[in-house]
Amino acid sequence: MEAFSIEQMASLLDLNVLGPMRVNKAFLPSMRARRAGLIVWVTSTLGRVLPGRGGLYPATKWAAEGFAESLARQVRPFGIDLTILEPGSFPTPALGKSMPAADQDVAAAYAALPTNGAAPATPPADHTLPDPQEIADAVKQLVDMPAGQRPLRLVVGPVFTEGVAEYNEEYERLRARMEQVLQRPDQAIPWGRASASSG
Image (cartoon, rainbow, N blue to C red; front, side):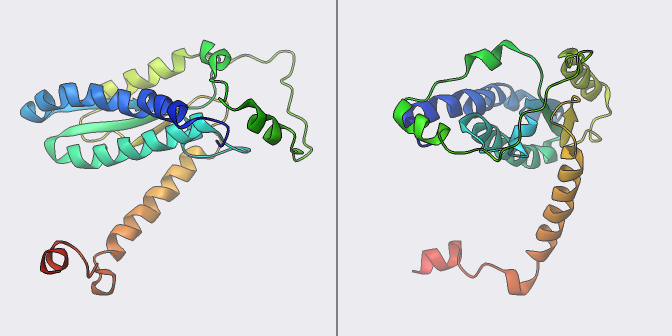
C-alpha cells in the first residue's frame, strides 16, 4: 500500500466503488418511485477475506462491500433489493492488467521480505478453470428470485470461496446482535444532535 501514490489509490477507488455508486444514483430515483427493483454489486471474496498481505485492489473491494451493504439497508424500505455478488477467483484478462506501484523502490523493499515459506500450490494436470458463466448464471438466479427474498450476499465459484458463505452468515448473526445491543440504555450514545446543538 505504501508504494502506491494517493492518486493511484483514488483512481482505483473511483473505479471500483464510486463507479457503481454513480450507476446506482442514475436509476435509484425511478426504482424508488415504483417502489421496486434489484441492484447487484459485483465485489469479490477478496472483499471479505484477506489472504496473504492484501493489497490495493482488495482494499477497494472491502470499501465496495461497505458502500453496497449500507445502500442495501437504506433502499430496502422502498422495496428495492440489493445483493452483493462475491465471485472467487476466475480467469480474466484483468489479472494481467494490475496497476504497478508508483514507487518501485518501496515495492522492492516489501518484495524482499521473506514469505511464510509455503510454496504456492500447483493445480493438477487435469484441472479445469472456473467458468465465468457461473457469475452470469448467479445474476440470473437473483433476477428470478421473488422480490424481498434475495440474499444480501451471494458467493460464486469454486476457487477462493471456501468458508466465505459461512463467514457471511456469522457476520450477519453478529451484526444482528450488535443492532440489538445498541437498543440498550447503557449503549445509548450520549452525544449527538441534541448535545451538539446545546454546546
